[in-house]
Amino acid sequence: MSSRRLVRRVALMVRGFGVLLLLFVTWVLGNPAAAYAVAPSPVEVYDIAGVLDRAKLVDALEATDFHEPTKVVVYTYNGRTEENLNEEVLRFARVEHKEWISSDGQKWVDGLLIFALDPLGRHVGTYMGEDRKVSLEQRDDIQDAAKELLRDAQWTDGTIAGVRRAAVLINQPWYESSAFLVTLWVSGGTVALGAGAWIVVRAVTRSASRKEVDRGDRSYANVSMDLEVTELNAGTIPESSKYGGQVLERYRTFLNRYYLASGLSNTVHALSRRQLGQRKNLRLTRQYADAASELDALDDVIADTNSLLNRTITWPTAWDRQLAPFRNDLAGLEQLLAKRNGQGDTATAAALRSFRDESLGAIENWTSDIGERKITPEEALDRLNKARSHLALLLQNHAETVIDDYAKNEREAELMRKEMRSVRSSSNQNHRRTYEPSILGTVYPSYHFFSVATFNVGLDTGIGSVSSARGGDSSSTGYGSSGGSFSGSGSSSGF
Image (cartoon, rainbow, N blue to C red; front, side, top):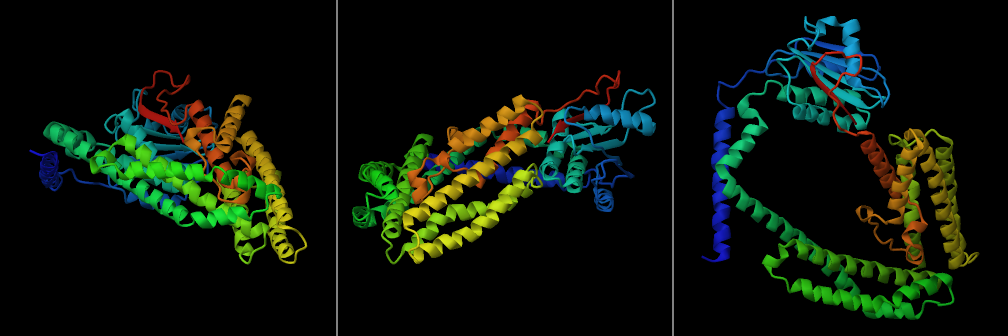
């Protein structure tokens, strides 16, 4: 039997097994014996932090169906990152609501679900009576359902999402559990699924490889078609110009890199359908696409350099392309300052806004001055370089403002600075920067400028690293030194 026929037969087996499984699960879930759904009764909200839309929250939770009648309590307070939310919830219950605790004082009362939130210390917790408790993994699942919204300060919607996930998992019938479905798949179709997984991985890799080849082909065709024009453009760039001279240095390696891209093109087009499904060849096709794309961008820069420095008829279009990265940075500043942890109401933020407003006017003046021959194209590029360098300095100052606010100590501050430097210098493979197709992007190294996009990546990465160092999303199950022997089901985690 040929390999193609074997793969087709395995695929049919997998599909047939999947249809049978779907019919079985549909029958089970549609069986009248399924547990009935009931709304929580009652819903109590103690919003000490003052962050919830009470009416919206209560309406949504009262419309949420549980598998068994469940009392839902929502509690919020403003704590600190280092505090134990579990301990605070138990303290609040002991002082204000003893009815939430069992008669022996050791557990949460039956039928109870508490969803707790500390928006300032950035913790979320879930606590349940013994007849409503779920596994630690499922408690993490409930909290994770809320975290994306909570990270965006959507406190009410995050709380609703967490409670709704709890309603699905608490007293969940066995035939609705993920464990049952996983067991069914594993026990009923290990061989078929294993073969199916192999087929899927190969198919996905093959598809990705073809997309990379197509991406490379488009760029390679552009470069090949414009090869003579690129040579002519390079031949008329004034080498005496500091910008023209630097671009010509890049052109001198252009043909060698083109021949390397040609070799990669021949190699990837010789790959068989089966070979395209291999991971090592996906890397090869990506290498081809990246090489061809960078050449495609470089020949555009060579054309723009010739057009701008010699003031050909197309110089305004070439100049607009040089301004584009700076304009994008200026346009992205407000979104950066408005984001959580963006410190938009600080002195360094005000300096960025002031610089943005001044620069928007300056850009128009530079363009007009080039057209009226008041300044040379080199002088215009000097001014653009100076402005972008100044923006980099202002962003660096603002980075320190953000770090000072978020970091609790010098160790955390240095960790955030390290992530910022890593992203900016592109030294970390996880933060690989793309080539900027502009004259300044060709003349200067990638770390010369500090773009708003790079700032955002560095900020998010730095906060993520500090959060992980603090314990991040890891669960805490203890009730602290004041909890005594209390052992009610519950845990909390950071977001």
